[in-house]
Length: 451
Image (cartoon, rainbow, N blue to C red; front, side, top):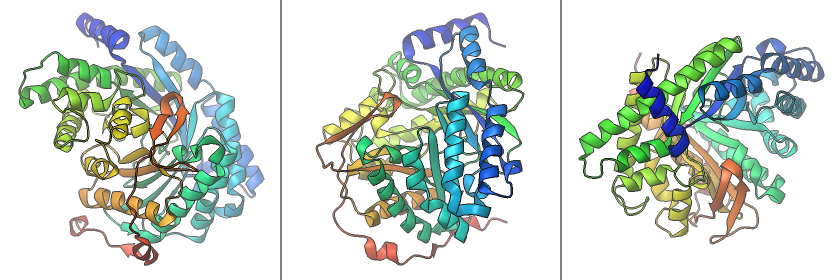
């Protein structure tokens, strides 16, 4: 239970330091919905989501009022849709539209899980499904998609990597009127996890039970404020302060998660303690790193600061709850972090440095806008680099890159809201096309042989 001091601290965090529950995400298994035809399956999918998630918005609003903690997003994740669509992959878009209608009916912000897991190989139905992603994302509003192309156990499926470069380009082109917005709803993973509550990469893993509540907590402003309070501390004391702060944030998240699960007749899954920034000032991971002693995020020392921050956040979360999961750590999405945006605009933060940072943070190259004429092969090569970092380091990495149609370096694309604005960042001009065309499988590293 919370004591009086913890309650007062939490109130202060909410009012002054941007603490919030970033998302309450309901994971729903749709395996029982597979029927004889695509039309029947689409209807059963729609009905199941509407039944299970009927009260998610009301319950989260009630909890927010009762506990005084903002709950920003209400979301649903589903069984990877490539499995649901397997018997009729050519009609996957029909299922995608049903998912989007269901999301609107229950009132959630996003629905994740229009996804495929092809880290070792692609069946014909999975390839057909993946090819439906650009059209589906262009025709839906709240549906999010992800594809897992590698793992530390299986290696990297370079055929899938090559295909995803083309899919990202096509998605941008089909949503060109919105600055390539479809790509903001599309993530390419290595080592994707089954209980991630954050979009756009959330899906309900096949190892999960029928209906689960996963909660994502975020508090970059709280951590920044804690560091500001000890300006002369050494790094050991700084890490201890971050750890204690993460403990408090996680406690608040666990309270909401348990209560939401009970009221929604679902299992409590995990609390994901990820420092997920927003474009608002005072809610930036970049600002935390600069408060630690960097003149600008992106300069030498950035990777070391981020590594310490990520580790301390995880340690504090694990102390607070035995159900910490998902990704848990620090996110570095460029367009969603005002400090990252400004560092990119002044040239102190580049894609190469961001790639180095992804070796020690929660996910990967996230919400990065690149010139619209960037080739599919270059996008595939960016995906391959990130997947290699994830595979070798046995961690989740991801790429959410937006080749903004008609844009060049020096321009920006603005998505508004939590997705923010992204300066167009340069990519290397030299080609990796021959490498990407080789295809096949990059074998798993030797340390995967653990059995």
